[in-house]
Length: 346
Image 1 (tube, rainbow, N blue to C red):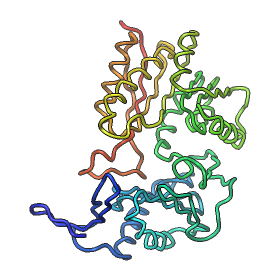
Image 2: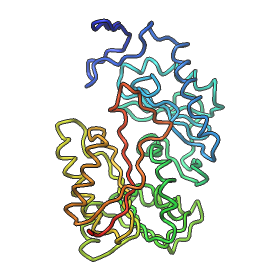
Image 3: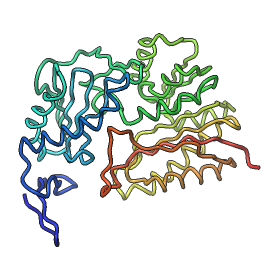
Image 4: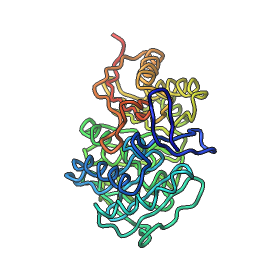
């Protein structure tokens, strides 16, 4: 449909069942197959720096960030996963799939639609033991049943950024999922790693990733436990770590739940600070789009005040190049990642 508002005119897709009524695509005409192919080609070009590294899995198309609202494409070696979030954009999938073939030699394309089971759109089904590479580390990826489309690509560069700080340190990886941060820490030479996640299946997948990379099993411990409860218990037991990593799931789905999420981040980080050795590091992340970077830093500052600690931010980042954010859509920067040194009060 065509939309007019003041001097603005554009073309978008209407969806009566979505919280976003209209997704805008173009100001100049109704999108067609060549128009979609152009957006996919632009996205491919932007990721050239990733293809110059030992990395075979990344986000190829990131919705609004690449001019295709409601559509995500993740590449896993020779397999692609198309994810659509609303029914209205399903009509674009044939054009998107055709455009993918112009740039990558694919064996199969999986389609994951919101509210439906994954299905094969084209080609052969990916193997359950598919292995991909991320900065030289190997990961199992389940494109059929894994969270997201198989892996969390958005923390890739943050995992690499934290790794050098972990050399010779004891590391607590809280909300570990399949062990991404823990695996980077192990390769960097961490002295001991405790990975915590409430999902037994996730930690079993993490163990397989460690085995795949032939990491020393004696340095790793896996605890099936809720992250909040684990931090409270470890603090009570007097356990201290050189590096504590917090990468919790999203704590707010809408603006009404934002205050509760901000309080939860304060509580979570306050407990984590009690588990960091003086002079150690807290690596804290938020993937809650409702919480701004400024609000997240405020939560860290309040957590430090309550914990009686000083925080020195030594590194701050958001999403990597395969998750671009339009300048007119700041809400698209959902990921916040801070590495901070933890000091006693002067």
